[in-house]
Image (cartoon, rainbow, N blue to C red; front, side, top):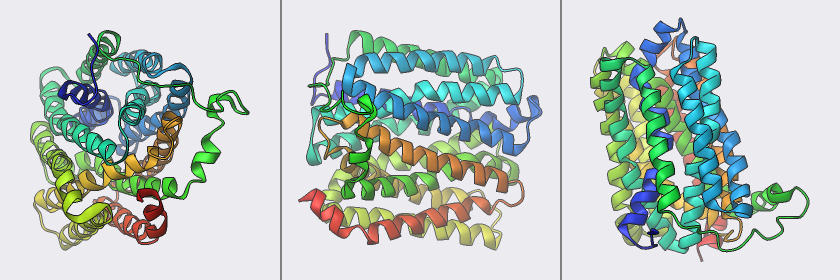
Length: 399
């Protein structure tokens, strides 16, 4: 039995594939202080387990998208999942911080496949605003992963220690492979045009990058995720180290923020219908700016409550639930025959930038917890500037 487009089952399956990324970055966050202590790692080295995952994720995205355009989504997806499982088990067995960081990079090389190929599959099956709606629905369901994963990870940490998080991730990936083998049809309609030219399946990146609408949407994706990744990199140290939350309480707080993203994505179609595409983007980016400066002001003022960090982050992620699906759809929409390559290139830019943000915030957070709100505010301003200069390119893409 194959999954069919325009069904809740297909949406749920695509959300499941997308969930591997947040599962890999969020489930082990409550364990960061414990694994750092167990392996003798500094806070900066602990943050590197996240940043190097994102770096490996960026490299992996370059691989799977173009190959899936040439050979199909299913074989590329299964190959990536196999690499992911091997990397996750290596993380679980890591004897040192250096070994864990290296294993995280390998895990990410495989974990990139489901994320980048989910975007390509959606473009295979849908187009225009219908693709944006499917991305929003997928994002809403997928948002349950970062909402629940830290809480689950906190319980795993309390019950079995930090290594159990990586074993659980490997088990989830095996279940994902079963869905691909038995339920997912091949959605690639035709081999990528020009795939045999210079550079083989990777030769189309330059043409994609020259598209102005693609660049605009990548900028919106990238700066938005920069703020999210600052939160991923610093939240466990801020909420547990500064505000004193335990692993389970941290997981619940983190999950509450992620639930705001899921809820916003679920209702983003109504916002788009009411405000239009441009209006929805302005509204979402405005939430970024308010959230970034609210968090900076509250934490700089010295309000000794975890809500000074959590509350503004909820608002930021609500904005991302509106902007994210529109930006992703805008990246792949112009390239029906190269959706995998377009998704790969967008993901490469986004995740490379996020890895740099993670390294910077991870190094600075030991000196001051204000590294988090400063990064959030700067990325919010960058998102607003990208949107402000994007009118002509976006109008050309949407009309």
